[in-house]
Image (tube, rainbow, N blue to C red; front, top):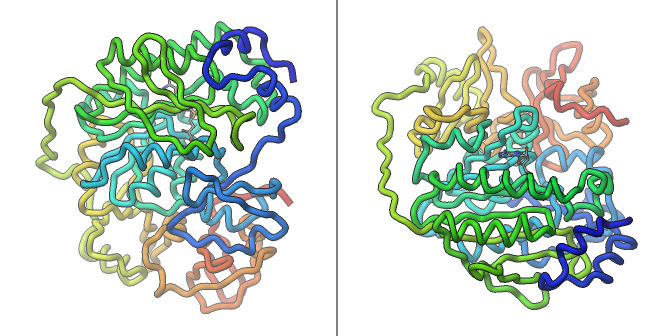
Length: 454
Ligand code: SAM
């Protein structure tokens, strides 16, 4: 792999950069495979037969795998028991450990969220918080919503907006993560094609875009709130220089993190304002190239929010609630609202936040889709199957691996069970719905999610 000379040149003198070792890691280094467990779903050890796992030191539930399995052919993956995430990125957990305020329920924005690696981590870290996972590119929102649905949590609202659209939501979030679009040099080992797209001009373009994104979103951060900025680029222009710009132009203060020396993460200090940034070099640790920093918003903003006086959501009627409750016993802390023909459950405490956000943003998904009422039948939604809501009262059919894969391919499933709706599980993990009819079994796995691989 021939790394761009101008990239290597730009890294000269940057702390932690060792040209020879860095080049060697790109020539001979195998990209690292790692997963992060869903703390709300149990991961059967079974699914990793023949693969040894070692913990990622900075993230509980993060594991390196000794080789790459076919995730597509692992039903446990589709059940949302883990997320395939690059190990360096998981350092976000440790950053949150050090900077997040857990004394009250937090409102968090993941601004550049697709496909959802950081959002699922944030949802795991803040089970009592509200996470807004936003993605500007429409075609990428579906995969984000899918990954959030698989994670099963009810505290993530998925939005599809440009950072500018957040102008109406000022001084609102306690913490914002900007995992910025970047020139991608940190992923050269995983994606050698990225090399062909790399250029100095693109680095500059990315830097300008990063600054625009940050300038657009900072008004949404509360005074004293934390911005976590990250890229998968090595270029100082997209990293330390952006931090300097934030401190100079945006009234941000750098937050220093404590590092465990054994992790071999490099702390850098920006030239103009001594902002602390954290670099991940693949020749120093088990992970790809990554940069992350935390900054605190200073300055006095006084905007306050009043909850909408009238509900803008359409709620389920008493009769509809009874019908739904006959299928699933929803705890009383949930409110059921209706979106098109579908009923969704959201925690009561999130309701006013959702209504406020819906005034300004395009909400792609909020809460859990419970299902729809069709005549006398309640048709359960797929999100319900994958959710953490109590499903114990529903008939369950356990599938072995082969049958589970058939189910995920949306093919015919042989299943013995009571007539009507059943939840299919694999290793005890819910996968979705089937309906057992007198002479056949209907597979309700969503067509757009089905796996095509044999
Ligand atoms: N945070 C994600 C994760 O952990 O899975 C990865 C995010 S990726 C590095 C950057 C994201 O920014 C992409 O999904 C991309 O579509 C989005 N993006 C691109 N241009 C953007 C812009 N102008 N404003 C905000 N987001 C943008």
